[in-house]
Image (cartoon, rainbow, N blue to C red; front, top):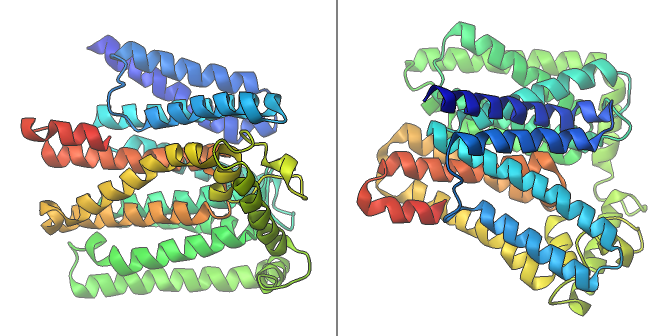
Length: 411
């Protein structure tokens, strides 16, 4: 037993090292080989700690998707080398997805996966503050898109708020959580990422609407009002400070939001053109698409679609799109059953399920402007959200014999 625990701990160490290296340190020391070595070591030690589980798992759909993309790209891709390279990267992300499920099942809790992502978001926010503070759109590397930092910080905030639902509400816990939220929120705004700011604002608002009362359910009404007033005051003071000290960022932010409906050849018009061209490509390559990450060779901007669903349809055709979307549809069905079955009267669990569903819907919304299959943080979030369904069924049923089959189907 001792050896098994040690193997798992070593695996998790390499897993966290992989996350930090790929998303942070690789931008200072560009060596993709180290990333592959770290994730392979994490896989090796985790498999060494227990048997390799394969039956009825969501990540098998991702493997099937990768196999299909490899086969279809071999047949139709203009640039097979690029397709193969990105498929290999996708398999790396699938390994992360698999490990998230393994760690979650082993702990019977999602806490490790969520905590690892929160650590990643805080490290990225701190590094961005240190190295990119004087930039108009904050980033610690010219090769790292500010939108990526914004998205990571937004979901870091969301997972922190999720943890806060059931955390003990003492002053020594509230203060550091609020401090981390302010740091992440500040970096999100400084990225001047429209999608990140909108998504973050919605996630915070919905948490206040659906989760605040339950999160402070052990407090009396007066205490809840005082805490809420304190949080609003902190937010107001932070806003006033930001407007005063970051006036340039505020002006640029207003400028970018003001261009949302502008017809001046900006990013909005480009995205609309890519959607139209994506549908045109899909209509002529309906079955197999044009090859993984090969849509860039069929549009006038020579880039990817900036939209998951258009990228899937154009690159993978209807077959690949369905393979990738089936587990997403199953996950939505899983959340529906978590919310509306017999345990809906467990208010704390129900609130947690609801907020995780909200985060999942936010990820699907962001997929209209981001591409999950090309970005590790988004695949990581997808893994957390699907693993949460698995472990929730596990804990609710407690693996009673009559429900084991249903649990396996949902995972």
